[in-house]
Image (cartoon, rainbow, N blue to C red; front, side, top):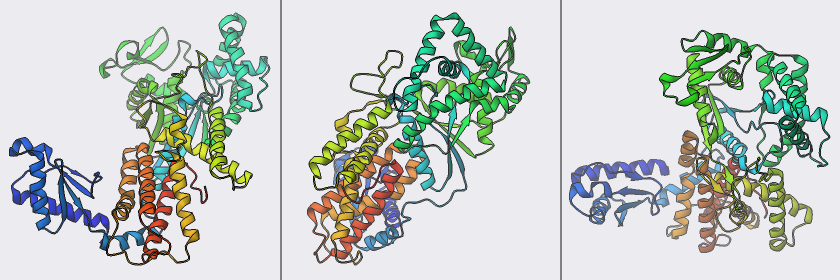
Length: 556
């Protein structure tokens, strides 16, 4: 019998006991603080006119009669499985290497993430976008979906034209990395846009020529964006969050897709005209204020960013079954308007994962106020801090190996710390939290994986064998934590909640360390079984860290 089958059997026994007692159905918790299943007695206390604690004790007694291990604690009736017969089957499942992996679903999923304007280096305030998007892609692939990732390059519009103007007229900065150098071109061009009428006229003329599909203008603006993107791609590679493809906004104009969208929206019964500018009247959809008019052309008849966004999503759905966008919380209204426009075209709307922004202890980052911390600088500092810690912990390690490991720890710490907070919740990034070797952080989980590898290297015997008759409490908790991985993965993938992965990694790492503290492995009579536990943890923890984009080192 598998742990899942045993859990279902326990749930059935609980249901039968409740029926016999004459009680209504009660909520169950499959991930309780104690045991494997908790029956929550609070909801019926008023109806049954008994305190929850008394109900929990009464139910526990009824379950013990049915052969279950049950006890009452503060209004919860906790049920613990007998892990002796379950452990061998669980370890056999884990030994295959497919434990927790989903079967192919046949779903084609396209995740658009990052898509930052190519006008300067990535800054830390929006670092959640590529980290969440990349992790979600890894998770859905693990779950069995066919996943592609894409970056939408905004190489049209005023900002893109401003960068192109800057590249043509101003010298780049002296930074070695190209995006850090070219941001000086953009800054000077942006200043010229605000103060120099001739520069403003040239930038807007270049923007309009692009929207008209002028190939020379499109090539200039797209070329400037590509130069900036060359440096931005290096940052994504360092972060381990590269996208599979880059889709250029200009393709939608030069390829005719935008023109077709305009033609289709003009035919809508919601289409209105304001001095030649076309819009959809969204009053009946409950949209308030000026956004009731969803403009999709200028007075000149040329397209807007919103029009091109509609065309882009029509292209997406020609290439996938499910489209997922990872967007900042400031794009919620824009996403709602996009969905309504797509509905008017009888097209699908994308699913959206919104995220709040990362702050630093000095406050919220702001480009206009000059309070910007670049992602590259954060990655550099993360690696330096990790290296300083390793120099103290591992003076015996070769310098080259230590530097490589420090870079992996730094990047992993950054990603893990971002992912452990629910996307919709903002948070302040702190180095102490991110680089902890003992707390809920990447270094602790990475070190636990390395500990598994070290134990297996030192052992002379092979993993395998029957579980001991008398198990230590931490040994049982270890088995329990391992068994939760498939359900955790299914929930995280199904609900697209990547923040569920770090707590699982931390819980498994903590269970391993408690087990290692309390139970002898090498040289113990139960060595084979306990080595199998360690090997299973190595496999599962390696999978979880891989989904998080964190290196699972063999030595640390």
